[in-house]
Amino acid sequence: MATEIDELIEQLKATSVSPGGTSDSLSLLSEISATKDPKLFDKHELADCFLGLTQCEDTSVRKEAAKCIAEITKSEVQRKKFTKREIIAAFLECLRQVPTTDDSMELPIQICRALGNICYLNDEARDLILELQGDAVLLQLLDIGDIADVSNAPQFIKVRGGLLSNYLLGGEGLAKRAMQLGIMEKLQKMIDTGAGNVEQHEDLLLNTLPLLSILTENVADLNFDSQLNIQLSRILAASTNPDLAEMCLELLHYQAESDEVKLLLAKDGLCETIYQLLEKYKTLASTNEARALMKLACELIVLILTGDESMHYLYSTPLLKNMIDWLDATDIDLLTTGVLALGNFARTDSHCIYFVEQHTMNKLLQVLAKNNGVKDDVRLQHALLSALRNLVIPKPNKNAVIQAGLVQTILPMLEIHQPPVVFKLLGTLRMTVDGQEKLALELLKNKTLIEQLVHWSKSSDYAGVTGESLRLMAWLIKHAYLNKIAYALPRKGDAPAEQIADKLPLSQDYDRSSLREFLANEGTVEAMVTMLTAQHLVMQNEALIALCILSVVYLSKSGEAHQQQQTQRLQEELINCKVGAKLAELITKSSDSMTKEIVENLQNCVNLLKTSDNLVEHLEQHNINELLKSIPILTEYCTL
Image 1 (cartoon, helix red, strand yellow):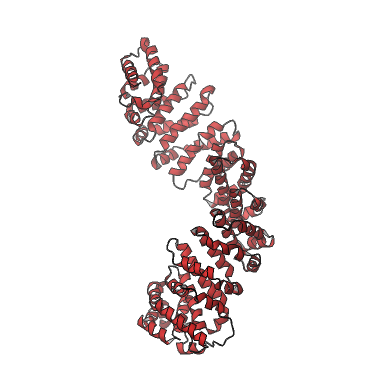
Image 2 (image 1 turned 90 degrees about the vertical axis):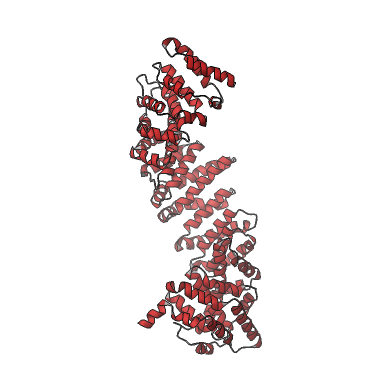
């Protein structure tokens, strides 16, 4: 085959393009363009030969020459060889004349193909077009609406789109230049035409929307005109072509990053449109491509709901009921979308209270009960926990959610070790115990839970899980015992240690068994001490409160024998965990940013620790008293 190609090339170079040689040239060009493997031409230097052919007066020869170049330049080697100023200039001059006097699109089609292939992954060719101001010529092609050459119109629309795509893929500079030349207005006009009759103008839309995608990727913060977003929404609703639907969804995804666009699309009914389409086609999502399209559509509903105004608007539309209905869906993507949507609706107390009153919360718990195992869908679990976490935040909801079995449903999920799920699991439990003394007391006794929290608190693989594990332990201590021992906490750090010791009557009648069982788990004290130097001030404060409570309950010079044993053990653990060093590090690193509340809790904690002689000595070794005096907010008080 290579020998035959060599002979063809030699014959072509030897053939004159005079009137008498036209038929021979056409025959040879036809044979060359029919060659299936363009790499067979790689060793040949063809550009100069074809330059002459592209300038031939005979339109048929020019057309066949352009067709050959289009085929030959499918090879990367020949793309580079045909990257010549003269050839590109000749092509641009021809395109400048479109539409031609005879309205034929055959030659423009082949030139678009040839120039498009030369531009493919070829910055040098793109730069030449820019130098020749050829970008204006290319964009001028978008102005061609009514194509008289009806039989060739679909092919022209396709190759025009391909040429512009390959050119604009050259990057940000070319895209911005196209914007300056009015490409958006041209595309808007074409899409308006297409949206008027989507079925009739399907080819036009399929070859126009990719240009919008390229511009979106290359021009930062490109915001479409409101009308264009509406048209994309209408095209999505009207089209039965999955490729067209995918393009619309992807473009709307990008635009919907803006809250203003979220509200626009919500008011235009896009979410309801997507819901209806998914209900119509859900049984057909059997291929990977169809499933990916379905997920893209689902994700757009959720994205629109992340906007505050759009969420509030959609709350009063049928979409709310539609999403609740999807809690009964057997399709995992529809079910997950329903849960995610409800989680987004549950961003206000009033909505959350409504969901509990209307038993939507119970439906969520039923779904979770069926999907709370190690092998169940992680994305669904994450969505369910997110929604339930939101529902349990309002105080009026807490008891109802607890009574409905939230804790019993999510505790089995401690077996799951997927960080995103664990993070939401711990956050949900933490919100649930807020102000719930009875539940906090119960969970402090849950050995499986506490052991897992200690384990996760030492894990450095996922900072969010580490932090939530520590915070949940601190919250359990706080909400189980703060009300019981609040009388013993001095304010503003103004009580000396000897006075605090007198204020700790351990005969106060309350059950310490939950805290005792919590402390019996190895690593619990260490976790609270470690939390003192957490990155976030809120966690530092929570650790101080937890240590204050431990100190009030156990650090005293009086008490029964078993109480004294617990006191002795706590003292030893605090010293072994180097609580003095952690306090010193906390003051050194965070004193400048400490709030008044944190400073008060820090003083309380230090004074409470001093009720133990052993800890007094330990704190002195770390110069805690002097470090306290260096805290700026305390210095300011003294100055005043």
